[in-house]
Amino acid sequence: MSKQRDYILRGEKVSVGLEDSKKTWNLCCRSGGMVVHETTMPARYEMLRSYFNNKFPECEIEVMYEAGFRGFELHDQLEADGWECIVTPPHTVTEEKCQRKKNDRTDCRRLAKNLENRDYHICFVPDKELREDRQISRTYGQVQADIKRVRNRIRRMLEFHGLDNGLPAGRWGQAMYDRVRKQLAEREISDSLRFSFEVMFRELEQLRQLRKELLQQLTRLARRERYKESVELLKSAPGIGMLTAIRLVLEWGDVSRFKRKEEFASFLGLVPSDYSSGEQQRQGHITKQGSRGPRSWLVECSWVAIRFDPVLLEKFRRVLRSCGSKKKAIVAVARKLAMRLRRLLLGREPYVVGVVE
Image 1 (cartoon, rainbow, N blue to C red):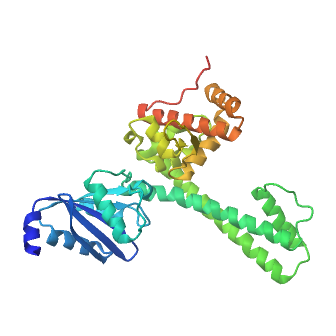
Image 2 (image 1 turned 90 degrees about the horizontal axis):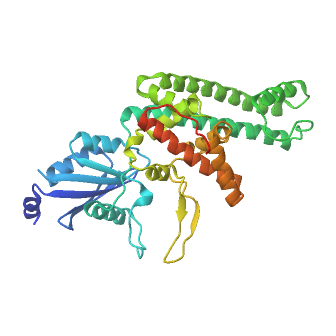
Image 3 (image 1 turned 90 degrees about the vertical axis):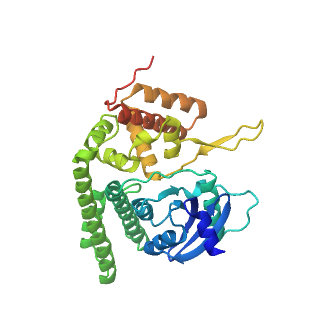
């Protein structure tokens, strides 16, 4: 039976659903509307290559797997060997409403069936250089978050040990933390407590140095030939500086892949969720699809942009009058700003401040 199946499949098109996990890969292979083979193997690419070459000789093989913790290395290896590979966002995988089973075997079957039926969404796969350059921006964000955590720990320690008397409430800048460190050095506290605070302040100092080095590396990336023109175009928009510009360029990649502005807004997660059915129309909060970083950067830039662009300011006021929420109004401005930035990158022309008619 195995030899007969190999003979029948020789030269045919085979759709493979691959469920990726840390140690194993589950595969379901479909051809001609039916499952032709299923297997589980260790998560090693050389075994996957041998499986395809031995089991499906001269076949046109296409593979689909969900984007996950392994990134896109498997995609690059499959494409390099001449097999088509599609990476799909996990939250867009179609499944039956009545499905009550969830395991790796079920998932790979679903992926294979969706692939064969052409029922899937494609995840943009950046080239290797862009992925590695983008990691600088994401590491910068992680270090920023670590700095915030250490600062919060210092403040909680001050409160816990009753050392916060006379210190201002609200947000502290770095100068305030330097002042607190100097005051603690002059106060009479136990050696144990002094050592604990010194560890925290040294960690904060090290993180600040790492952030400085990462910022220098991002500055060098912004001057690289591949990104320089796009960065300069984004910097021409109000509220956007070098740091935000290079980080947006690294996160967005080639925006020409979005044929319509609505697709770009959906990619950013700046479109309202929809729960409509029949005659009932109901829209909710924005979907928040994709990375939260670019979305938050756009909102921050919008607060500055409305002070320089009358059209964006008018947009903010109009939405504010309609809903009464500054938060919703600035998100609407962020979407409009994003659409303008997309147009800059497509038209390769600098930003022009609008005029309210």
